[in-house]
Image (cartoon, rainbow, N blue to C red; front, side):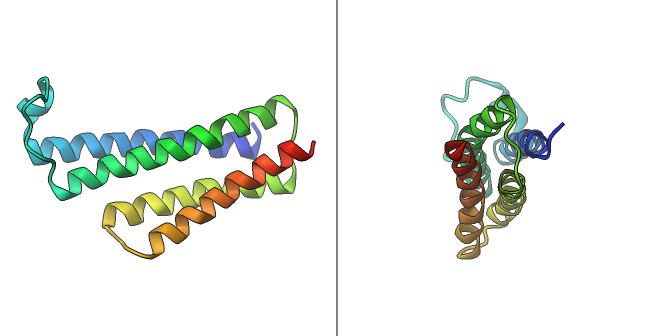
Length: 130
């Protein structure tokens, strides 16, 4: 398996971990019975619970841009030092971004997000240049 595909798998595993964290935060904040129900009358989420939803949404958004590019590169047999570095930057920054997001760290978090975006753009640029 290529490095780029491994980074995609790791990024998908990160999404799964974040969804599980979000589910646990919901149960801790609202209780297991309300979270197992229809959730129509839940009170507003607690701050950490809301943050877990935002980090899942943010990572899912990044992954929906990154994944097709990596799959297209794999299908086209494109793997360069730039696509490898781009994929590694994407995953590493997304992992750090998720941790910073869950901790509520300001200022640095958006800078880390930009690194992941740069990694995605690196893979895109390699595809467009082929």
